[in-house]
Length: 202
Length: 202
DNA sequence: CCGTTCGTTACAGTCACTGTAAATACTACT
DNA sequence: AGTAGTATTTACAGTGACTGTAACGAACGG
Image (cartoon, rainbow over all chains, first blue to last red; front, side, top):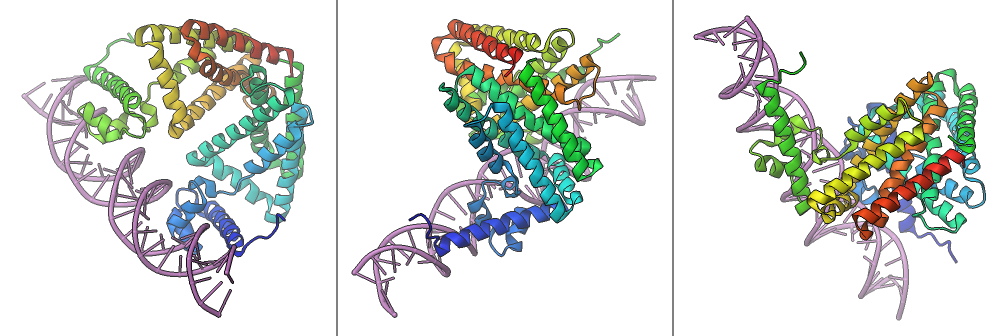
């Protein structure tokens, strides 16, 4: 009863995917600022306006993993301890990264990180996504604890937990030169250390 | 030996102040998006370009307290426990807010918060400032602990501590209807509860 | 009084993003 | 299959933040 995907919907989905993929590739090749939205549109055979019909901003064109993280963390928080939930999600992200590296090469993965870090607009977009993650965590934690999203304990817990994403990003950046496998191990160790500090208390 | 303020410097400082004050007032009156940078420039008798010579962005025109917070937190972290430092800074901010409310009225203070919350560009600017605060905390904590800013423990501590700013903002929003004095008391209580949760551990 | 330095101005331009209306492509119904 | 309705793309015309540059003028140091 919930399957009949109409042609219009498939086209829409495919175009969206094509736009995002094309844009991401172009951003990686030429840099975010050097690519105009009109360029992406032309490369996909549509007009600029169509791009903005599908994406709310130029930054949103970049294929990122935030939606996955939000969904995964919300799900895990429903039946795991907060810190465990976060470590599991970030562990999976690390696995995904290794898989990506196998397909596109570790250098490409690193270039993606450098692109984001080097582009103020993308950094800002990253921050917004992190806030979405925190809000999702607040929601999930409040539900689980039977309190409201206004509860200070819930909010500080969510902030601390999503702080692990900071640790993840920086740790990855720091250890990336050591290659995929070794970096992954070091990142896991850093995350475990940070989580333990939160668990024990400051 | 460090005082001779030249005329040029005074003019610069005064113009900067005038621009920021004028812009903030106009934003509060007409809304952020309804005020063009050229409007602010005209109101101050300068050109648009001059405004951008003084401020990096339209959002930066809004007079906010972040620089004060960054400075204060950095200073306190040098010789207090992290959580105490944060609570002290936020306590002072609350005092400042009460003083502001006495001068401009509590309603004005609330409208300021609503302006920021209702304006996506200002929310983004707020996020960036929070990150600056976190980075400053990392720096200070690393110095104090004798480690590097890469240390996962330092980073998660900084993230958790600046998470208190989240609690502060939301708590203030939640209790603002009760009036300045009562709201301040409630906010302090919420902050104390959140800090205690971090101290005890998750 | 004079050369230098520094901020403002005028101007021209780029580009993300928006609104609107007409055209086109698909869907659903008979 | 035809057709009425709906979703999406297009063409077009804008808005406004932000940038670069060169000329100008005012304050600085001597």
